[in-house]
Image 1 (cartoon, rainbow, N blue to C red):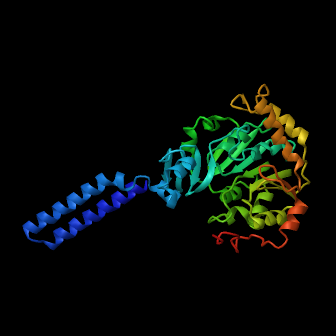
Image 2: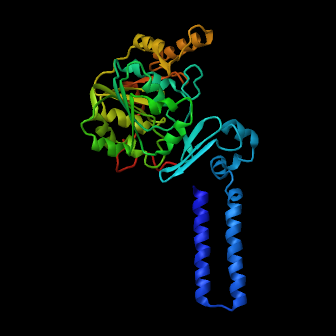
Length: 359
C-alpha cells in the first residue's frame, strides 16, 4: 500500500541521515541530539501515517466534492471505501454501495440483477439476441465479475475463458456473495495476463463470442483494445458466425473502427456487436433464454411477481428500437445507420492512439 511505501522510504531516508551523521563525527552532545531527533521523526512518521493517509483515495476521487457529505454519501454510500486493493497493477477501490473504481475511474459495480438494473447489466444478458448458440466465450477484462457471472450462468454457454491483467479483482470477488461462486464455477477459467499477449500466445483458440466491457475510450492504453490492429487480432479468434461484443463508451471513432474491420454489426446501447457474418437477431430466442436464466440456482425473473413480469417485457422491448432515437437503456442502431452517422470519424490505429489524448 502507498502509505506503507511512503513510511518505509521515510524511515530509510532517516536511517541514511543517521549514517551520514556518524561519518561526520560530530561532538557527542550534537550526535545525541541529532540521533534523538531522527528517532523521534521515525516514531512520528510511523504513528501519524494512519492519520496522514486517511481517506486519501476518497479525497483523490471526489476532489472538490469530498467535504460535501450529501454528495459523497449518495455516490459512495458512506464516508470511506468499503475495500481498497493496491498492487503493482494499480489501485482498485470499492464504495460501500458496491461501485468499483479502477485507477480512479468508474469500473462497474457488484450487481447482477436484471430486475433492478442499476448498471445496464441487460447488455450481457442480451447475448442470445444476436448469437444463436454461444457455447465458447472469451471475456477480456473481469473487474467486479458481475458480467462474468451473468455470462457464466447463461443457459447456452459451456465454457467461459476470462483474461484479466489485475489479480487484485480476484480478492474482491472472493468476498462478495453476488459473484464469489464465479471462482468455483467449473465452466470458468481465469488467466491473469494482458489481453493482447494472451491472444498472441493462444492463436489456436476460437470462440463464438468475445466480450469486452472495456473502460472509457479516452483513458491511457485504451487504444490497445479499440484499434484496427487489435480488432483484426480478435477477428482471427472468432468461429464462423462468431461475434465481438465490446464497449465503445459512446466514441464515434471506436464505432467507426469496428465497422471498418468487420462487415456486419450493430450498436447495442454503447456496445458494438460486430461479425464477419450477418447477425442472427431473434427476439423470440432471447425471450426463451431469459425465461430459463438463473444465477446460482435463483431465477433472474420471478414471474409470480408483477414487477418482474413488467420488467421482463420492458427488457425485451429493446428489440423494437432499431434506429429509433430513444433514451437509454433501450437503443439499437444498425450498421448502415452507424456508418452514416460516423462517416467523418477518424479510424483508431495503434499509431494515432485514437482518443487517448482528448482529455
